[in-house]
Length: 582
Image (cartoon, rainbow, N blue to C red; front, top):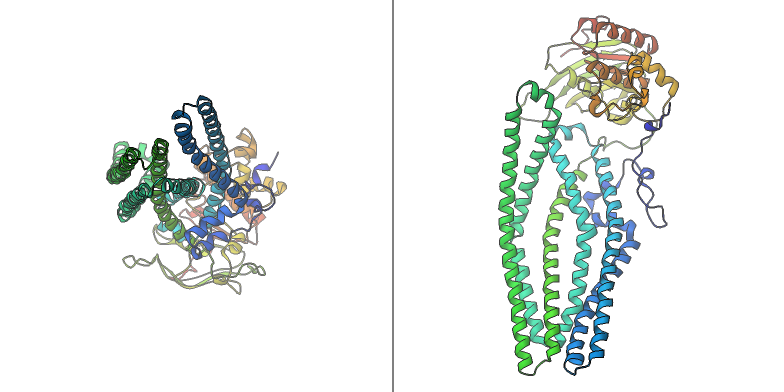
């Protein structure tokens, strides 16, 4: 039986060339870059991801510059065809210039293809790096963040990366190309006649002011769009995850109605935004086309008055069209810059959040978790002024190697107490102590490494059976086989087509509730924990399997301290009850 599925590493997509950063899987974990975003400006943050590709970016700039120069030569050849070919009837010269233009257009096509390939090379890798850093930051945030933030909002922030990626890899290059083209062609227009250049400059300035007048409105609408799209994502995720309950309750129409309402809200925002965008575009096009017509009129009058040649008029028309096209791109870039800035604000709000255990030093000697687990006057609330505390003044002790049962009515805070013991939440007041060690001074990852837990809403990973049991770290095949027997999972593994290498599907959809619970128990046992937390961990098991697992635990892990939450008497009858004081 192979165990390759247990070796899950972060994706390594960085090229192994000199001057580039090492593969992602070899970088520090958790990464430091995500925490540094708050200290950097938006451009500095973007540059952090572009910097490994400096060589490729330099090559791209050369391609863009060469493209601009070829675009500069095309109107020059048009002027030469008219002045030195058509007017003097030199057919050979005309043919030569046409052949030169064919070569120029072929070069432009080749450069366009080359630029697309190079952009794809940089943007695809940069996007993966950005997303990896984002999720690496996300998974190390405290649980409180995920309880305050909807899934839809997190997913919509991921979509913000698409905007940032397009901006950094494509839009910036388009803007650079447009600027180089304007800088190359505008002096040529000035050389033909200064009044033509002045007309272009004034119309372009008016166009810019028109676009800037809509910045505040676009910022407000982008914020509304983000919040509404987050609601849509949350609604869709809930619909798909709860489809079984929706069908059982006959709630299909109500669910579709809820989805329709949030979609209608998003559509209204989109229509409002696009209507204003249309007015913005119409006004901008009107200004640019008016400038183009004025320039054409002025050049025609100049030819009649003998101020410029017919070739100058031809090249002026070509240059003006090119210039206004590039101005459209530059001003469109200004809109994308604003949109990207808003996306970066939302992404940086994640980076500014302190990670779990931010106030504790990294590394150091491992803590000693031998001894009893004690809670001293522990209280907890979610920080809401209008909500009563969940727990208040809890004092209890779980002696080393004992089994402590937490019993009480539903909603009394038993599961919350277990989460406090696992450091998934920090107590509002009070102290958690193991032996002589204050858990507030211990990194959560170190403490949880000594703990096994099965929560009442525990889920399986979308992976193989083996990967679900081992979860993380190096595997021990012999211990894995033993754990499968301890947790009464042998019949599950035997019935699967590929044994422990069988994929369990999303949330273990191919398994029954009891089978999922047994695999979750196996995952907790595999860690050889010093403390084992079982929150309704056997609620879906039959009495026989529950009794066998309990007996196996007493034999295999006799020194493990067990904290059990359950309502069934058979689960807690051998536990110590009554040591908690609220």
